[in-house]
Image (tube, rainbow, N blue to C red; front, side, top):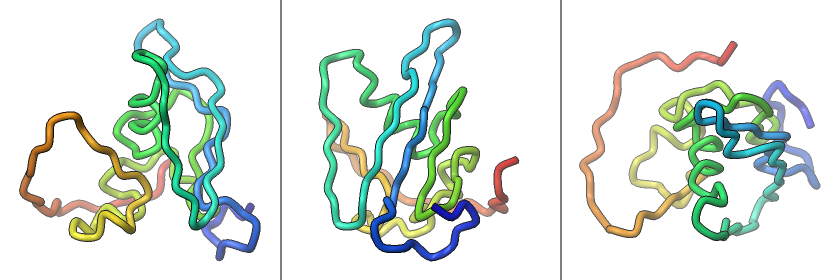
Length: 123
């Protein structure tokens, strides 16, 4: 997999999560999570309460910063990018094209407001 954002070749995952670790203080919520999602796949994350489903999606989408591991999208390392700089973040009306779509138990509608900021690559 090319780490410089080169075109995705056949057989490579669109989303690759490698050895993801997330901690909340001293508690390790995710330890070494790895997964791959290929173009055209639909994936559901299921599990019991406290299993790490929400933490997994928050880390993949950039809402929280992982303590270890990598998140790659189309061969590009997006681990350190904030959620507003991730692929699909500037297309509010095209949720079908987004990397991660999350639903909440209580439906709500929030107006979309663009942010004026520069998105730079993570260090």
